[in-house]
Length: 324
Ligand code: C2E
Ligand code: CA
Ligand code: CA
Image 1 (tube, protein in one colour):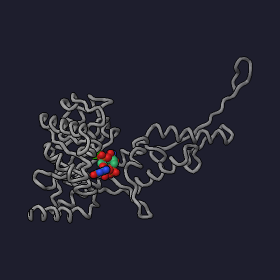
Image 2 (cartoon, protein in one colour):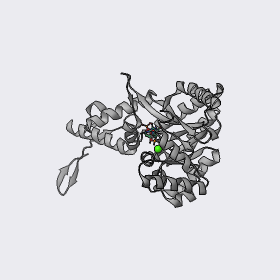
Image 3 (spheres, helix red, strand yellow):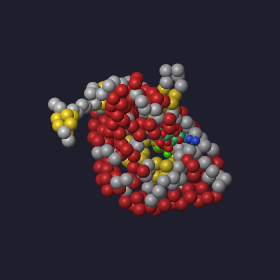
Image 4 (cartoon, protein in one colour):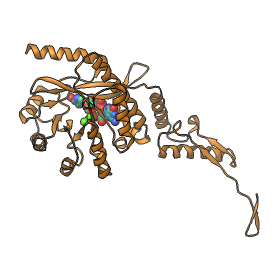
């Protein structure tokens, strides 16, 4: 209804942009961006109207949005695959577990590595439904291996900082462990220090809840972030993973060697397991071994395997161990 404003007859009209969760975006920031894009379109339509977000008409960065909508579609269609990289116990010359690493297979047969889509998924919030999907896939796989009496040991999955900070993570864990009837000690969550930085109080509670279920916790990429010693004392961490950037030059660079040896000793004093990642050569493996870092992972032992290659790999490893 028109109204008088300072003696002038005035009327208001509204213009509205609409975006729908979760079809158009997985988090608040992107939902608002999508709504804003729809609003811009409504204004162009002559105002006094509303428009729904239409991804074909968006005004955001087109390459990012194409990638983003492909990612959302891939999550809906469950297009992701987990690969498994063995973790070795060099002291006893045996396998002690795996790390699950996500891959995104493409129609043309190529595979997209996580570095190319995990940062985007972390940015737009898709990492949460993606990890829920991967957790379900992983536990389903572990349940199948258990049925086939395949001894896979302890399997780690990477959890992004954003997801670690959600209380829903616990429900996802409890639900899937129960659904697939997998013992909690088979599972380890790999988190980075950034997961603890923003809200250490919440992180501490979260870790205690995870531990109370019986799931293990590993601190990934150790040495690259804050490497806070007080965190090591405060948080119930089972395993430290020494970042591959230190392992890379361990046989050439004295500083890297000293840092690695110090982390290994520190972990021993604190009664925390330590795993070196990115072991590519026999020299690196040997050096780590004499430092007391027996748990190792890297191309020297094995590249990440497809799920259907795992049982053959375990059998081969057992045969080699028995014959040596
Ligand atoms: P990360 O957790 O540090 O995983 C180790 C990465 O090093 C993996 O790369 C692995 O394939 C690679 N790698 C293993 N051995 C060697 C080696 O001897 N030399 C070298 N140069 N590299 C080695 P990938 O699979 O491409 O994963 C990259 C990163 O993506 C991971 O780093 C992790 O941060 C993230 N990521 C992978 N899968 C997931 C997932 O399911 N969820 C989340 N949130 N992040 C994931
Ligand atoms: Ca990792
Ligand atoms: Ca790592």
